[in-house]
Length: 356
Ligand SMILES: [Zn+2]
Ligand SMILES: [Zn+2]
Image 1 (cartoon, helix red, strand yellow):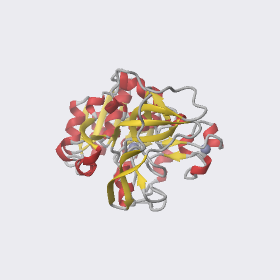
Image 2: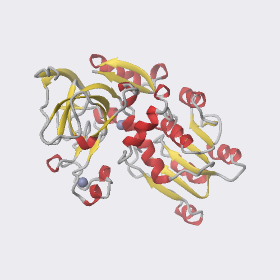
Image 3: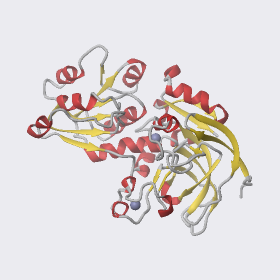
Image 4: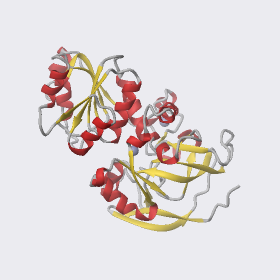
């Protein structure tokens, strides 16, 4: 039994763009919850959006708020009814816990829970509309955590959430055995997704992007890279595939031009998976006729339902190699510096992990 203090350090968002290191009470686990000591929490691209206030009133619903949703740690206390975990278990978390009762939750699609945002129903989006992991301890429903093997480090286990986002999109979209996949966006999700599709038997990967991150993609396994600053990605992918087009394309960049270009570089009958978040809420496909006459299928993908255990195996077996993603670690006290490195993509940063 660990000694659990009454107070802990937390990086608290007190208003938009206002982060403060505070001493706050350690939360107490309720029924079906465990208290976890947070060892590693990775900064996600959505964190700066929450801090800026891109989704006012939704992310977060109120202040003060503790961000952080890509985390790994250790179970240190059990709430009522918890049977499947014991103190000392090493675990990784998911951001979403659905209510568990609505039609979508019952079909396994808890990241699109019909009670999303209503924490009184048991639905949680940890780090978004419910307190997250940028602190020393937090409580989690056991449905939102997964045991991790001893040989997977906490830093790499903090990648379970983002890698799950990539795997869920691949599961929805599909991947052609021995086919060709093109990926927009050599950021963390894109690099993880590239390793996943290779692990699933895709023969050729084409990474589309620019700068240091594109070079990194080449170093960690992209078969082809296309630099959008130097060439037209549609022409480049067509040339690589002998005019045929890619079997699947995954859009992880969030650039509003990318989905439109993707449709033009897919084979007829190809499939497009969308992970990127677009700043333009009015974003439209300009030409639906192309989609219909070429039988293009498009899959919107939200988060990572039901894939964490699979991703943990992939990380353990290095199908997804954590060392290709985690570039920096910082203590909680240096969160703002860490955020600056992450947002500014300084010093070749990809995943920046906080160790509270
Ligand atoms: Zn995330
Ligand atoms: Zn639900």
